[in-house]
Figure 1 (tube, one colour):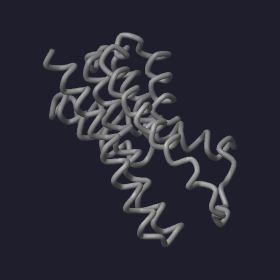
Figure 2 (cartoon, one colour):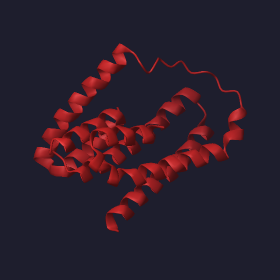
Figure 3 (cartoon, rainbow, N blue to C red):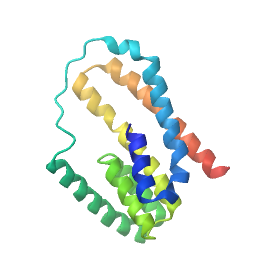
Figure 4 (cartoon, rainbow, N blue to C red):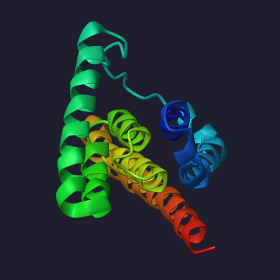
Length: 173
């Protein structure tokens, strides 16, 4: 769902960037759906419940807004001094905190001419990858199940590799 959400954010705010991001994000979404569908019977085991806060609250909205502003400020500085590679590195880091904020910042910078639409699309893919990978330590801490963590790590690496391969193929061809 996160891959699709980031694609929707990008499409709303910087439609010209979608051409770069759509195929890698859809490839990763398809990979995740295939693995989930294939292993749906394994999910029948009882899993201890997790305490999760509501995703919609004033605190969450304000945090998202603050992260968006921070990402745009740092992104502008990074782009000014390090070029597109500075922003791409920032998108990997930003994706570990909030891929949605990072995607929104990349889109905003693209529509204001601070980034090319292509760089904003690649930044969205990188932020999405970082966001997916950062979940592994959280899963390990919550489940304390090394087998589950290893299985999910293997699946995530395959999904991420598919996205990166599609991105590279898109850039080359």
